[in-house]
Figure 1: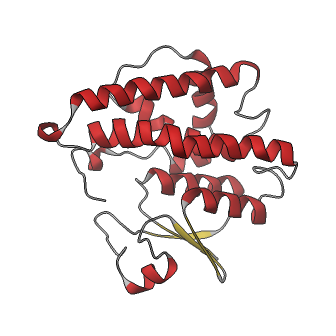
Figure 2: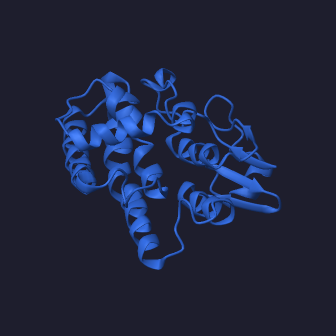
Length: 215
């Protein structure tokens, strides 16, 4: 059986569990990190020397890093559904996935969510948070434009690109922040949040993380 290590309130773990849910894979979830700890245990470090979640074990195969896990699960269990075999389509999916991790995630998750929500008020750099929010909005405006003629990021169907980006939308829309009207982004979010796997694994309350910097 597939085993997933990580805390359910981790955005990167949520990406993996969302895809596991979309694939309907039987799995065992083992909490790790946060209050549970365990990231420095020798057995965990043997799986991921970096001591971070998520980590999966699929039989004898161990994979770490969220986007590597997404690609692995889609390739092995997805039957061309979420990570198409066509090189041109796959490249488009990969481009948005990499962009989500190197551009959107640092701005929103690192700058807005960590810099703002997760940092105690007395220690926040409000100017830095405001700049990160401005950058986040610019990035999401690009997503809004991408959706002008399609229901999902690269076409008619959900792909890994949607998972990599869409995993952040629940927090974006739930935080008390200024959000400009981006109607296509909002409609896409509506399409995501009616999916059972998204509701179960991404729309997870995160109040436990407010003002808390520890993993």
